Image (cartoon, rainbow, N blue to C red):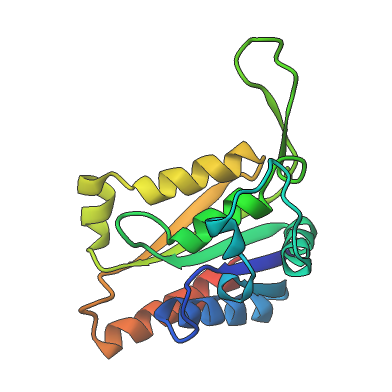
Amino acid sequence: MKKILVINAHPKADSFCTALADKYTEGAKKSGNEVKTLNLKDLNLEPFLKFEYKDNPILTPDLLQARELIAWSDHLVFVYPNWWAMPPALLKVFFEIVFGSGFAFKYKDSKGGPPQWDRLLPNKSSRIIVTMDSPTWYYNWLVGDPGFKMMKTNLQFCGITPVTKNYFGSVKGASDEQRKKWLEEAYAIGGKE
């Protein structure tokens, strides 16, 4: 049994990402995992987009709770749409603030050499579930998969490995039948965790 945290990074409640997150959660719970959900749209991240903050910003209770959920989990599942070939800004600011120094990593004194750091979130794995309007082959092979590269690098920087991915696209022109198949696939992915 795993302790799984599903992080929904879509800024709208009524989205296909939310439906995928729900189906994944359903499958993961059915196979005996303990699953909790964190919806980034419900967090108070906006002040960190508009105002200066120091290296260690004072976190609000909801952001401290997000850190507690991350620390609790064995497996992090990020569900988000791919916009402009990358995750939404909401997820980026979440990383910048919640995965900050002293929680997810800590720089060592490198004495003028290249930076070195401790990875403070070891023994965790992650899965990325992404929707996109482009066909997945186009995103992987012609665009070069920059969103996954960013996510994998960020997570491994903190000690989270392995990082796997599942892409769903092209969502924009998908039929109801295709969306139903993708929801069944998300359920099956959750059931195999």
